[in-house]
Image (cartoon, rainbow, N blue to C red; front, side, top):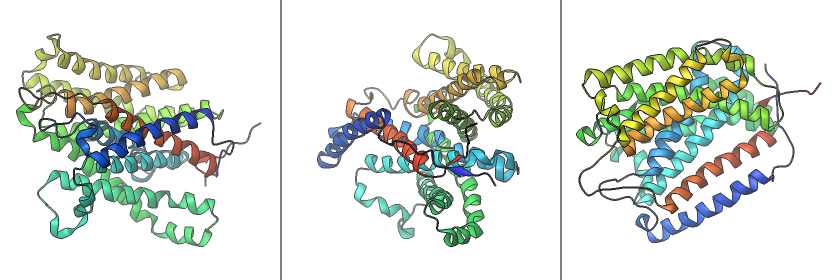
Length: 378
């Protein structure tokens, strides 16, 4: 079994303090939201009932948090135990991302004090895709914390409790693969309801499949990005032998995505819209060119051995996949004449605060808990 260790060292570093300052600003605006109402801090309106908190924090944020889901598919479904050193960091990234996405939904709910109604069976609307997404994400957050619990028990030397949990951990691992498969595709299903309000460059009967594929693509990209950044920031050896093998899967996945994405728009007769020079067309081209660039980089085995090219490819996948989701929920959505939306400064700072809180949690966890593989300096 791979040994893990806490990195140790000072937690209150300059990056940690900068993040803390951003979190405080976000908390200030959040206090205003809960005291004076959602309209006091957002530009949302009846045409745009959800804004950046849902589009980024939930729709994009949960995809960025699919690192654990993507690695679990390889390790537990395809039985590739050699990738197990990547499991805990990926699981931790997922846990933070999903937990903060779940919390951010509370900011967006008008009657937030009744949010618990989602979990009351007699109030459940079983025909609502939003209900399925909410229930799956809520349950998955609990599953992620249960999967991560052995790390906490290892830290506090609760060996007997850890042994008991390990006997049933397979249940949570199975749920941890099933639930994201359901709600990530359902996030695409939700925008099927938008119909003609969503630009034909993004509306498609393939929305559920495309959302599921982008979740896996972004998840793998997040694993590569996090591993490379951690190696440089904490002066650890690169996990290049694992990252290059994972990257070999990406050209196939990206190729499948791009064929479906482009050919679907083409067969429906809307591809010329991409070349009219407008904002929507340019964004359509940009998001797909980013993914195509990643495909071309990773298609060559020698490139997958180069940390710099791996980093560029992971950034291209993160940006391209995130843009697809953001454009589907915000930019490509037009509810009708007269309705406009651009996030307000408080909305942006609350989102920046969520991201900063995730970075702070990451720094604290890797320095105090046995998350990263043990490394002995020569």
